[in-house]
Image 1 (spheres, rainbow, N blue to C red):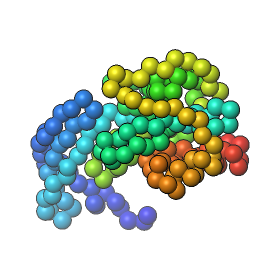
Image 2 (image 1 turned 60 degrees about the vertical axis):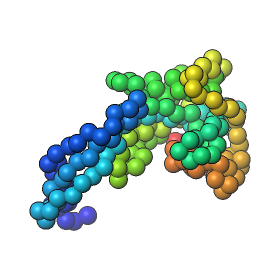
Image 3 (image 1 turned 60 degrees about the horizontal axis):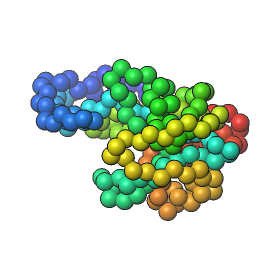
Image 4 (image 1 turned 180 degrees about the horizontal axis):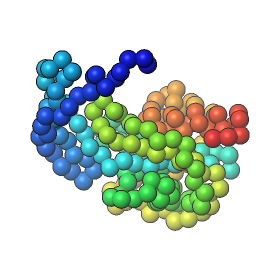
Length: 185
């Protein structure tokens, strides 16, 4: 882009806290627009998350669980929020073992990305694990899920059916496909 995008920067005038929960906080900011007007921005603050595309014998480890906001079951790669000050790679390793019962001593960062930058600051880190071994599954007390290892063809069918519909898992499936074609992540 050739124009100076600093001309469009919004400056925060005030912040009103609305809600503080275990996982997120919600605030409403009043901002000064570049033309002098003001506007409000509803912002979700999130500590970030880590996810793992783990391959076991050439298949992708996934979990199926009920997602209340969607009112349906979803198939997803293992993932979870970062604890305060936690390294994303350590969180990815923790979530892999907690949710699937498998672990890996070699995680490689695929990408870090913002999930919904229009209203949230959540950054999700996606890791790749190829050398997985049996560990110990220990899900959270309010977490009910089923673990499965799926083929690329199954993953693509689940995307087409809407059983996989979250961005992190779709990104992982396409990264996996690229990996199969090129041998690199």
